[in-house]
Image 1 (cartoon, helix red, strand yellow):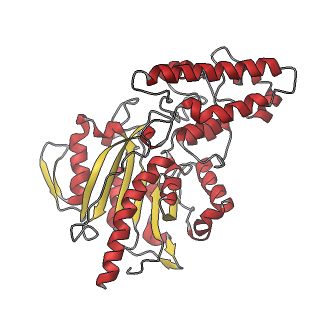
Image 2 (cartoon, rainbow, N blue to C red):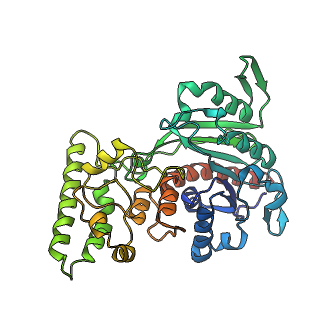
Image 3 (tube, rainbow, N blue to C red):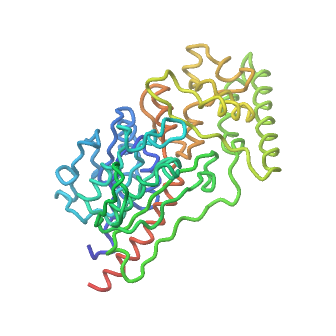
Length: 397
């Protein structure tokens, strides 16, 4: 493709409710397919694509039919301009493959975990031969215990040797990519008010990198982290102000000031130590283990110091009125609980992004997401190379 005007296209697996898709869209990519197995998350994607004017291209072109990535065969189903996509045409294949196999919070079974989708991602790389590959995971994938597995992934992409399960050395000729970087990005360096380190792999096809083309790892966009009190002040005031013209006005005003004072003091305390009052890592939780809350005991304790109760997720105003849950949601001794919308702010979602399903289903979509600002930064770093390569190729054609 020599034209410098055509869209830069992407396919994303394990898309969730769109955290990575939002970031890549902002970076200039247009999604040909978003693959997600959770029905509520798929519906979130559909509803946002259908109602957002800036996603008009996706409304016309994005394939949302596919659910199980293990059954996704892009060369058979994904189309562009009415034609089946051909190997080598796609600009970016991206995905936040499931993190439990490598998470410090789990058993870290790695490749022995049935949820490990790295092999499927590599299969799709082989079939699609995209110009670039971006894979997101938890930082645990970079632990020493997974060094052999990382060697396998790297060798499969760019050629090399890795140690097989039986201890023998295996040489793979690779798929023709260069692993440009595989490292950690901290979400709070990109304006996300949360402690959320993510391991990102960026690989680019070697023919794209010819003529000394270089990839640059994204630099932080924020010199100082955004604190929880900065991020949530307006939304928290809006929640309490709903009670300002009623019998709970005095209680609501006092509760809001108590939260704001507590969150600010904690931020100032941490800032003096060279840190900041950012949130602990949000977790989506498992469908096997009850409703949504803000994480394990350590996370709940950190939220409590920020004036927020982590024992659950608050109802929206109308539901709270119906269920009479205001005491739990807003006026508890440990402070207010977060709403789904506020959890989404902590993840860096747009304020008007739609989440489908009940409260717990919505919260899980938020908690499992890749923060859009981080995805955008990585997307822009990849886009810089793809644009430069396209311009080079257009001049040479």
